[in-house]
Length: 218
Image (cartoon, rainbow, N blue to C red; front, side, top):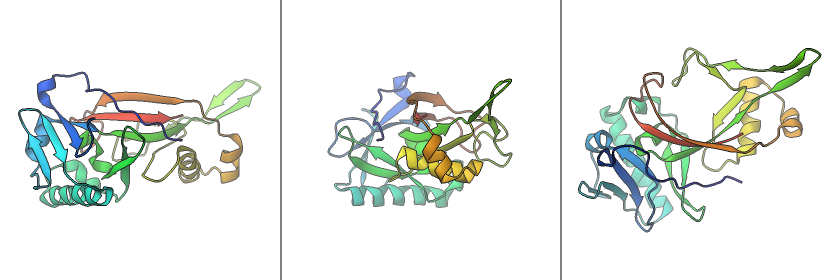
């Protein structure tokens, strides 16, 4: 089961951060940098309050909210406002509410703009030998959109809307390491989660400076 975390504000100057709110909910679902807020052209189904530092999505239903945020991002992609939207893949991330309900889904590449919590999986494969344990450390391709050529776990991937962490591990293992479904289902063991906040830099191509928040299933 996917754990849901509603984190507090990132540890930085509060005057530079806007809370991402949704009508009908009291808690923030993400945090936007001031530069991000000013770069957006906000349609009338958003309520942006520069005094309170909030950007509120006004849709009343899941379907309406999904449509509104999709239209907002498509408009910015077509204008070329944010370089990271060039990597649009049609894959969406879930944004959960405090009762684990699905509140809205956001295009994967746009998640850093809103500072939402994203969910993913990481798996490290190892083999016991006479000399000790060998660990499979992967290297990311030079063409990767994020962190190219850097070392990585054996298998890793983002958890899209509608997929469980274990099914994500099974799928990613086949795609990235050519592990059979039977091998993964029989041998993979859950070890917990790691939750973190990070600030991106030039190693994450096309993103610029944004704050990302993640919960990774191990």
